[in-house]
Length: 237
Length: 237
Image 1 (cartoon, chains in turn purple, orange):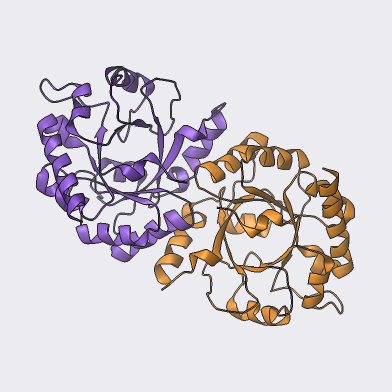
Image 2: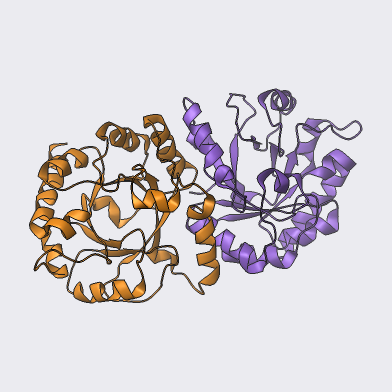
């Protein structure tokens, strides 16, 4: 299976629970040059917190995905391209791999699987809320991360592997090794990208960089700098 | 991805830790009409226990797979078609989904993924050794099983879903519902098939039936009866 994400250099993740910076608008985010928008956060990604942002994004032409937390709401909205369902490979228990997902599938009448894709996370910052929330074992060396990436693609059929350094800039050697271990899956990188240089560094080793907090903290101009960093890194390579 | 298993109505599983019945030979098993042989058991599927059986199967023309236990040995043998790596969807912890597999991938220099496929088990007999071994939660109703099957294919990219009633004949309504929930994945059924009728019953609701203990307990003629049952069930449908 191939996905629209194969064309993504840069993705803007918006946390519906956080406010925008100054006078920024949600629609303005699409003008940064980012390739896609993901509405997602560790918790509280609920229908009510997402629907008003989708309304504000209605004229946007890039894909808009929702990454729901573990009881995904399912609703129709013209702006919505699809769902990205997270699994956490190095979580402390199987809740984050098969447990919550089983409950969700069981309790949902009809799931449109054409619109529903999976993202396989490897959580790497033990201080982050996602690490605490999923009790992730983050003490991983490069061989551990490479093995998780390979396992994700080859055993669990994942097409998106996401190295989540949440809040801190990652180790680019580990990111590069993980990407090299993948055959056709896309390597997403997230965490700590806040300016041109950090975007350029991580975009040079990942297939897709995900930019999150800088929007809420520094605004759309800072996001634009990260788009330029991603673009330049991919043009050079 | 498609696999050779799409053509399988009947598979003979051989436990390398058990002896054959009377004067049966391993090579004779291929003459039963079974579509493939899997060498596998809950424990002790090691290189030493497998290699001599592969030697005995050297002239066999049907596919021969090894289903290794959790530290899979990797070796070359002319008779070997490939590996089937089990994951257990309803295991008690993540060892049987990502844990042991991560250790295995990490500690193996080079894995030939072209030869390595995954089988997603749903373990349904709480009295079985596989249930004990994996601490599987077997108290599942039809909706639970259907949700696991759907999750396996759609979220975890599995192409083989295996309902394992190990040692007891399963509920054919549950098996049928699980198969109906799959889009292109193959539904394997295993457990309690010992004669023409039981083979016919389960082959009418599963894509592939797996016959195990009857070989060790009753011999090749009993296996032949189960092949006839599978063939007749699939010709009728």
